[in-house]
Length: 322
Image: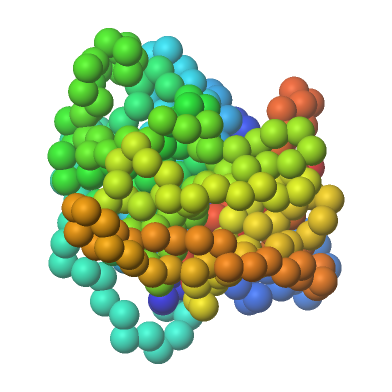
């Protein structure tokens, strides 16, 4: 967030999402060298009705007061929640003299509990809820507006949600019970549902990857072309994260081989139906530095705690395992 660059969202295996202020002043040890309490840097806790792991978190790059969280499946609950954490963040002092002001555009509220004045700012309720009885693999906001959200669901599809139409089905239903999924404006049938990453330079482009043993497949899509992938390429090793750079390259972090940087060639050619845009892989090089922020691993061990961190836009994502 432009005014709070040390704010991160942490998704826990218990289903809670915690907003943490990890500024140097907050994390500094007291003079008596005692361990600081977690309450000293906890800004807010976002709780759900049923216990299940948080699988993804994402701040909106346009308005970082909006946070999306994804969860494992529960037959009686929603697995995609949208939160407005503005009231919780307002308790913090701005960390710089940024002139950033919150955009006037706001998302509608479809969850009556979010309007209940009895809830404290430190324990907000979600303002929108989607995907009943489903599993969320990954998610990310587009960089063009606050209401376009990409979601990888159930290991077999990517959806583009329009959050301006918040009319989810009842929590006891599932996608197969509805011919049209409420709020979805486009879909892609694919197993590349992991690590969704939107290109900040080209608002229509996003990437994701499919997990395979030995090598993974990275796929690039265009939001203007539902159901069609723009291109795909194989990456040796187990991909754990994708990140678009400001120069248009795509960084793919792997467990075994560090980070690879991929260039793309964009252009257009004439067809019988008119001009058609295309994207091709232009080249790849290895990144020799130890980019630990790109390193993560999937952990489903029942005795381990899975913690997922997501910073507001302009900061790298971080994952921690204990």
